[in-house]
Amino acid sequence: YAETYFKTMEIIRSVAEEANIPFWAFVEAGNQWNDGKTRFDSNGYYPSQGEFFWNVGTMLAFGAKGVMYFPLIQPSHFAWAESELFDFQRNGLIGAWGNKTRWYHYAKDMNAQIAAVDKVLMNSVNKGVIASGEEALEDLSDCQYLMEGTAWRELTNVSGDAMIGCFNYQGKTALYVVNYDTKYAQNITLDFVDDYNVTVIQDAEEQHWSC
Image (cartoon, rainbow, N blue to C red; front, side):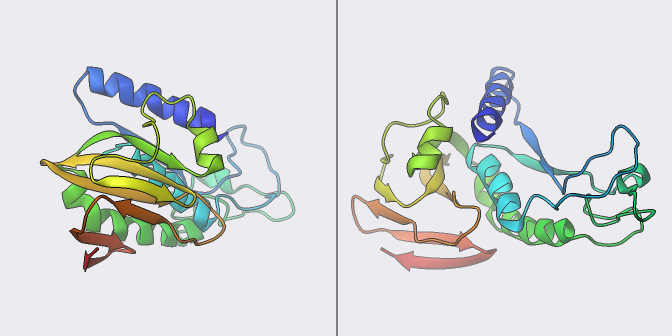
């Protein structure tokens, strides 16, 4: 459940801040784990691309300084199936057969975005998150890092289903915007108190706008 996910990340972040160290987080690459080492047929493949991107994006917005994928290489018993010997597609960035899974390609695309924003996020301090939309507000309602309302510094309002990480980037404002809808693209609008020159990094491409 999302509220449990955020509560866990809140605890980890809080402990990391007390120790003055950055926190890292794991992202599941697939599903159908086989810790019991039994044979079974897969029942669906999760997470989807939208869920995978949501998972990574919300971690970055929450202030994570590192993202790891589990598992990188599928253990052979994680591939055991019943109606066939193996299912090399159910989890892992790399299947036990040495094949690239769908999550390999998801992670490759997401890592390109992370590399593009790395210079900002790694040199920024997360000051909290903004939730916009009913689902995000409900999932984050109990979070100590949730900011009240949808305004922070130059930002005056947010519309759309979004979670936004608010960062102090060497005295400047940096915002990491995450689409909270895991199925559909949407328009998320940010309103500012004045006109500014902004840098937007999306899909690993950097653009400079005046708004």
